[in-house]
Image (cartoon, rainbow, N blue to C red; front, side, top):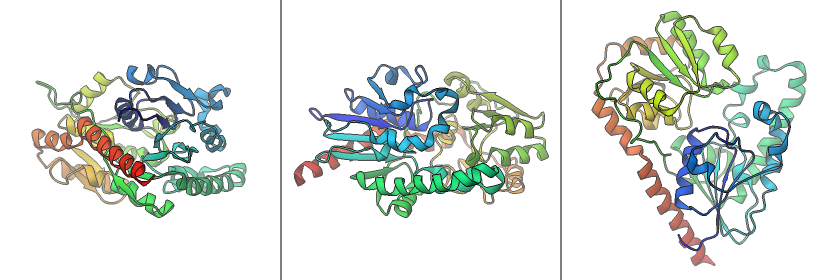
Amino acid sequence: MEGIRAALVHDWLTGQRGGEKVLEVLAEIFPRAPIYTLFHFPGSQTDAVEKRVVRTSFLQRMPFLRKHYRQYLPLFPLAAELFDLQGYDLVLSSSHCVAKGIIPNPDGLHVSYIHSPVRYAWNQYSAYFSPEKLSFFSKLVVPPLIHYVRMWDALSSARVDHFIANSMSVARRIEKYYRRNADVIYPPVDTEFYRPGEGTSRREYDLIVSALVPYKMIDLAISAYNRAGLRLKIVGNGPEFKRLHGLADQNIEFLGALGGEELRRLYQEARAFVMPGEEDFGISALEAQACGTPVVALRRGGATETVLDGETGLFFDDPRPESLRAALDKFRGLEFNEKTIRSHAMGFSRGIFKERMTAAIEQRWRAFTEAK
């Protein structure tokens, strides 16, 4: 797509999660496009992103940003709207929060890849802001604030010319909250790096790789494993770390954030990968499957599109510790084929994602230019 003045927009760059993996591929498709983001913690991304032109918002200069960036949520919509994108023919936003709400060139094309409509304002509001989690002051402030975020999120969706969702589950949310249709292109999984180990034996532990935030329902898994007495390793950081650590017995180990090779080894050696909450898509579950490791997941959201029940993993139906424990008991009596599991994961490879995204963008660009 030579000659197109393109820009990439991403919510923020603070780690290497699923959204950042999508951004990396978009940057490959448009190697000269600058990246606009609310804030960027230097060194948090791969070299492919760190070497790009990265333009941040006024939030980058806010005090205590690295530790308390979530406290600046009320300013996120304004920060996104202040990006000057008028000089670009094409804007590609990668959004789970406010990136899709930028103000594009009225004569340009805006394609938005949606990881989820703002979770804590819509489908995960109760997980974050149930009454028992809010102080008296928060009960006065949070509901009207989130009401404002919902209104802004719905209204700003009109600035997007075309939506692409990362799963059918997210596409249904886009239709529900924005009244818009979306194509579905599954995000990229690095199936070349994540692969079964040579001569690696399975250990007697299960594995969770997740941000430690309320909607991930890590506490459900902790309760189930406490009662079962099974070994569980948890990889990831987040605001729930201290609370979750306090709930766990000695059979549960918190490992924090890990590098790629160490994480791959854990995937390769784990007996099972566990996904206790509803995921928008769930790249970690597919990284585990790429390593030949079966998944035990809640039968909701993206897991229903990435796990084959009885072939590459097992579902539990109710978000309760008892339901997960029953699934773990059943899991111990089943045998899974490592090659079958990996073959399934290969259908979500980085190469497939890049090919499908390139084709989708080219199709929308042709339609856009022909309509002028």
